[in-house]
Length: 411
Image 1 (tube, rainbow, N blue to C red):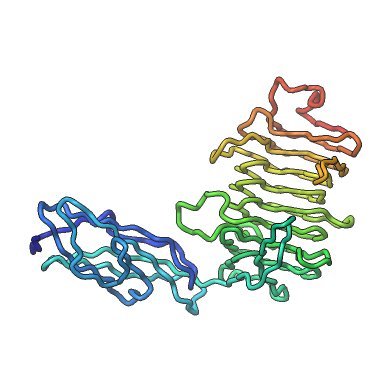
Image 2 (image 1 turned 135 degrees about the horizontal axis):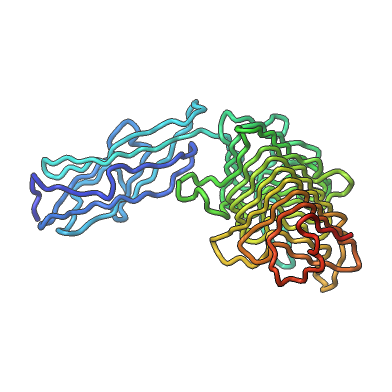
């Protein structure tokens, strides 16, 4: 074993950077590889130093500790160092920086690798109770948090959701311009409470141009920027009415918006000037809902951009549906129109599709045909495509598409 005064170590990087981390929430694990390119074995002391060293955690080849001595690196070999950080809450509303060094002392040779972490305080909405969901002989705990809707959400700090945040019937959650909503894996927003018999609940999203409201996963590392399926959905439960979403960006979830059956003539959802993208499942799933959308873009969804399912009333004006999904093989079209479902007893139940109107819309994607019709003739199945650009296979039955360039109407 030699501990040469001139022994120099080499590193996989000179700086370990942690993207924005929410206070009190641990980071992902970063890896630093330390190489010994010398022809002899080397022993080195490794220490976390700096004012913020207590926030960082170090593990060297499975041994935890922020100050480790006589770490042996064989000649022409390497070791792995695993690093994490947790940010303490502070009074800052704006992001702040923690900076430290990982110091290597090999004889008289001192080298260091910089550690940089960006911290951000947040409003946390964490599941603190549960209800039981019984499915046959299976019972599942559903963890959620009842929101205090008396105070609108503001953009002073990000809002982080763990589990499901629930808007109780009779309450309205208002989310004002510029809010950033981060949802953990398997988390979502439920408008309505599945554990009460009272329907209702409303969400109002008040984004504006250049100060949108954003819904996305809570993994802020650059690798997760466009990864779908990081959180669940915004779910408008049965009976939820008069929901409005204006100037929002909804991305990287399973289902962007899931709107269930309305119990009266009030609209389930009005959505304007919004982008929904990178959904592992569906952009907008309507189930007997009443949805009106204008100037909205839905793109890159693993199944449907929009599923107008089990009937309902739908109006899309000046909307773009561009489904160029590239994470897996997609065999479902951008648009689904459907007016029935199969019950647990195997019977078919019809629900009227009162209207599905597409006005001045673009329906594009990677499939040869991007519209699917699933009709039961016993019920209403009304649709209109007026001055729309639609991706269709030229070999399709063109009877129903005869005047596609200008309009396509069936009533």
